[in-house]
Amino acid sequence: MAVRVGHGDWVRARKPERISCMPSLVLPPDKPTARRVVRDARRRRRAHAGDAGWAAYGENLARGLARWLRERSLRPKIVALYDALPTEPPTSQIRDALISLDVQLLVPILLPDNDLSWQDPATGRDLGVAAIATADLVLTPGLAVARGSGLRLGQGGGSYDRALLRVPERTPVVTMLFDDELVAAVPADSHDLPVSAVLNPSTGVTPVGRGI
Image (cartoon, rainbow, N blue to C red; front, side, top):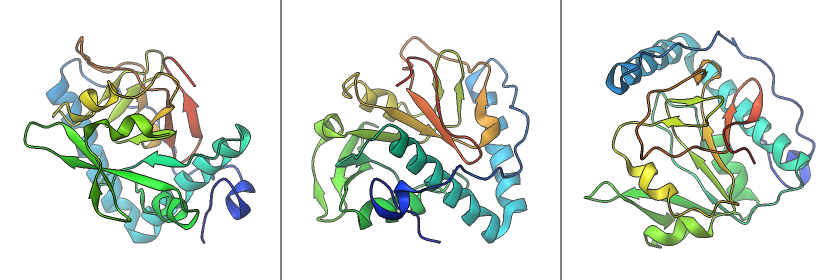
């Protein structure tokens, strides 16, 4: 089923269906072990879900984002989005819907120094590291986010920590997670930045940290 946002079908998006909602993970206090816990859980989830279950995760994520945009009367013109890795919450349905609405996408390009430049996939043009500052909405990957602080546990390269420094405070920064990855606490360092909200398959967009 196609899911759209901002106009037409996506405006009428219903509340996401719950898909195997599990208790939140409890993460150990060191980052390497915490990352391993989440990655192991994601591999098990991917193996258990199968292709149909994985597609359902993607549809629910798209519906959840659509519902939030509708409720807030938001119609972003530029969205920073990424291509999900095989065990990450799928992004393809959101990407296809945004493209169908002529939203300009910014997709990350990893630079040799682990910073992120941003490409317009419609033209292939590299827009540079500062392009993320032009986005109306930033969707980020992550392994977990703390409910109270909004601190995000990333993959460990520091790329998004650097990129998010360029995002204006008013811009919503939403991390895409599975349900059990919105947790009580994550191990964090002084350079880690909070995000505005998380998007997960069962509950859609949930404000965290500084909120939206």
